[in-house]
Image (cartoon, protein in one colour):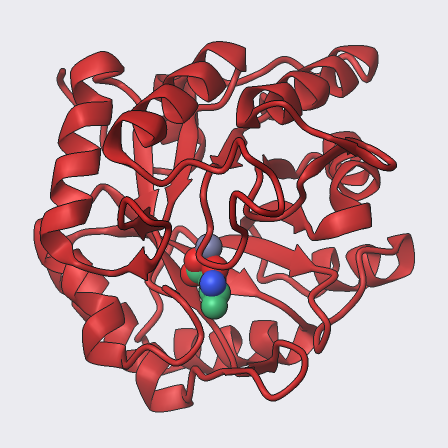
Length: 276
Ligand code: KMH
Ligand code: ZN
């Protein structure tokens, strides 16, 4: 079994300081959150930029500043930028950050209800647009699937040679309109992947740790962070992103799964080594 890759989703686009004061907004807060998560065991930071007042933004210049500042402190850290942004943003707005040629980015693989009137829109043509742009710029994509139909969509685009190897997925489970993070749903998704794929799980809310434990046992990888879940245990707010990562490191240890360094992560995902 490969070593465990831990991704930390430090900020997200929806969670606010009113929900958990440890959610980072400013560049300095982002750097501190990323650095602490890295020292706790994370090798990838899943990043959504914010303005100082917490407003989500896909502004390329803001991302540039955050990435540069994180790399100043932790040069080897893998930064995975979000191309999902926030609900309601246009494809053009969401994709501009790719022009920075980040090492890694998300590729959202289908449309989903996000609760109430919110719809996270990713048409087939949107997915093709993002994938082709990332192929062209040599950006590693993590394919975010919120339900089984999204995996089927990736298989269709693999056949069309739009999505290229090596395939790396993320099961984001527990969103209002998607599949749950229960064991049965996890097994169904894992067993539906194209052969040779790697995958990570992101359990939303109450699913964060139980789903992580399943992935740890079955050879998958794990994403945690305040984007997905604000609690360290039932009813107790996490003090930081790093606390969530530390809890995963503890679960990994209990299951005899070693944690991957940044260069091991690049090797497991078939990424180029980065000279820092
Ligand atoms: N904030 C959601 C609308 C991604 O990062 O690619 C989309 C999202 C997925 O978080
Ligand atoms: Zn995200």
